[in-house]
Length: 274
Image (cartoon, rainbow, N blue to C red):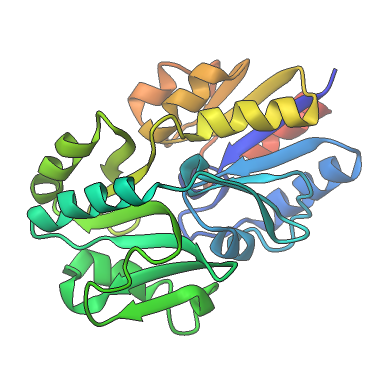
């Protein structure tokens, strides 16, 4: 019986240093070589997720941007993109601007995955995030700095993100949550609040079920750590929360496994597939 094994990255498969250990890399590669269908679902782009999982030979499609994009990790090509309509883009941007906030947008522009930002209108936390994605960082060639609001909605926009103070982001979340899929949670590295917006109905869970069908898998087994993994856990046949996961996710898990500092996912996969 074909089973799809799907792991979140940050806080789950990755260590707190945003890397994979040698043990995790060796374990996953050995299982992949035997034909196991192991992939990941993340809020990251293909460029940054490929960088932090470098050395693991994933071949099945990977879920990116919280389900808004599914890509082939070998050919480096998108297989699915949940694009916003022109009206949706305008509505979402207006909700941020009305509250004095300026988001980062992710889009396919001239066939390339780009992210656009306006440094002067970004807060301290958002600037800190942008700094991790520019310069010599992995995927920095995607960065598109703007010097006005013009161009922020260029191309096929599929993802809005803003990082800052929870109370400032809350009105935007309340304004959009009924018409979009919004992820509103603290960043595990920068300790600020994220508001991420994708099309209504888009999530890691919806993308996981579509990938399960695409592969002809009969079962879906998932691993996670955060509240945005709850829909994924609810869609899965089995779900495992790392011990550093939030309590609300542990409550929904089939079982709790070792933490992301203890190769918890790799050890459990070896046990399940041994």
